[in-house]
Length: 502
Image (cartoon, rainbow, N blue to C red; front, side, top):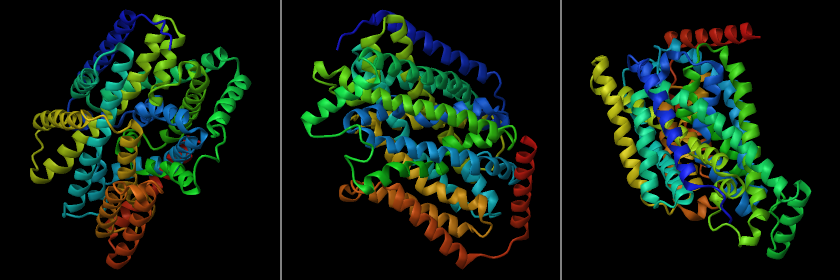
């Protein structure tokens, strides 16, 4: 691989990017006065901010590194992940966002998913809230770890730093601006980071396809290379099994239960804003995913003469360094950092809220604003420290780490969120039974190679969660006028706001 970029210019650009993120964090710090501000930005996100923030915090290093790497290694069969995610994201914005925004306000102005569950069922039993908080902390530790792995790999390839040093740099800067800026800081930096990701995934594949001779020449070269190896990376239906395609598309199920994504719905100004946010978010996502797929494909012929890429997940990084002069390459490299850091910051904020709102407050009912803010910031440090220790072992790929955490949230929270919003018959025992079933199924299934290799663990976890929650709720349902009244109020409020938005 020929590198045209000057490492000094790249380093200066990355340092400027870091400075900009810290400045945004400080700006948000000056506007954060209490726990609701720190964890939900006072429910004042605009549709554009919510959409770009949800997209940037969702996609992470997976979009810039994991997906292009999977396409490079296995071909278009891996694009089913992007297809499933895009469909899942659209359904999430369409059916979850308006109702969740309305219901969390109606149900005791809940600012976290676990606190919403407790308020939804009008229970003084904290078992569901505590369980949900622990699940969030557990799976987000793995999720944050995947981002730190991506950060370490980034600095290793871009600047020749050792993996650990690169990982610590990314962790340090991200933790600092998240620590001071909270949810607002994470959301505002997400807007900048999401824009950078979008532009990077437009520029790199378009220029690279031109360099290799155009789209037709690219596909011809890939077909020639594949024929020699006995594979077909250009066929979206070959190279995998039916269960493999189902597993890839099933990533879309995960959207309904990702706390760091659906919390953006709760932070919208009104439920009516969900419509505009959906259009912006899905447009961003569709184009970005397409760019990631083409990045993986065009890297195949581009690096063929060099013997291919040693690590497929470096496709975007390697193309940026090989094709562009120093300044442009530096901006593109910063886009990869943006993808990594946007997700890590959002996950740290949600982890913080789980510890403060859903665990600490259960055992101590004090409403001391200063104490809760300090504890929330301390939680950011604790989660990032544990995730950093896990990231020291970078043998797992970014896609594997993200896949496990994504399945954990999707299978544990997803069905309960949907049932809470659309079925008044869901009970607290049903919710906690389903949530635990989903989480345990993912943990067990995902660690048995013979099972995980055949079917993505989110599928059995999601299905069993739904089944258990339904059966237990049917057996334990008792009419509750207060729950019914709030459910009807949520439906009316969501419908009214959506109708007004038209």
